[in-house]
Length: 248
Image (cartoon, rainbow, N blue to C red; front, side, top):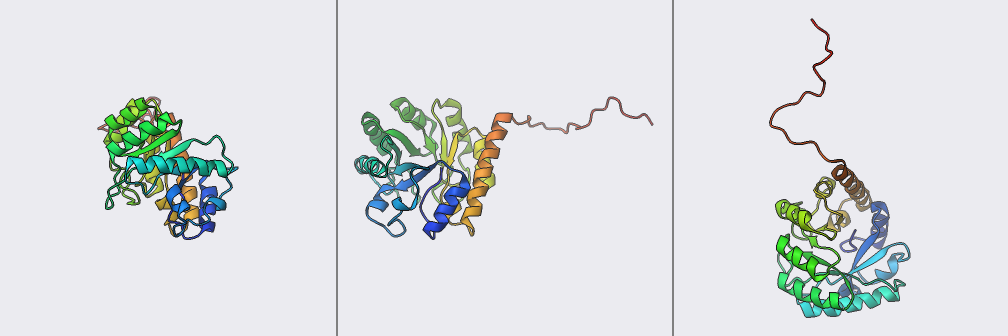
């Protein structure tokens, strides 16, 4: 999944979405609705016959705001031709400095949105207990952050994300903080089902190239996870067997 924020131009955004190979793209409902800088005309800039829209509640500080914006997002998706799109990326973020999600607000909003028939994809801290509660509530995924939004710090919460991956019966999407393709591969090698990457692509010197690199790294990481890595050993293990060697 890729995001639509922070691109310098719509052309760069379109080229990056295509180069990434992604199938789902997030759209910040409030910013499109208010035609915030960089978002006016965004909904019309993407071919929604080819890309699945994931409306998100970015900018919402309370559960009540998030529920209201989610409803607007569903209507926006319908207006753009995706009649059966009930997806919402749920963000409840009252913290303006580190942009960390509010667990209590997220739980409250998720409960209401699930009742209303949304497929809820909640953005959360890497909290295994919260992830399980949201899953049991009926959320379609859980989306733990690797590190703060847009920070490019990579996977700082690997131990907790590993626990979430071990326990989850729904897809786990690592969201936020990935800065390089190697970090994207790392998250997929851990067993993540998908990634959501925005800033690392949009703010790269050449966004389309970075988008392609992220897409390839995601595929490589998933293949590596499926293949199964070798055990880590304390001592060396020769690649060539000793049997059949030429005697001196």
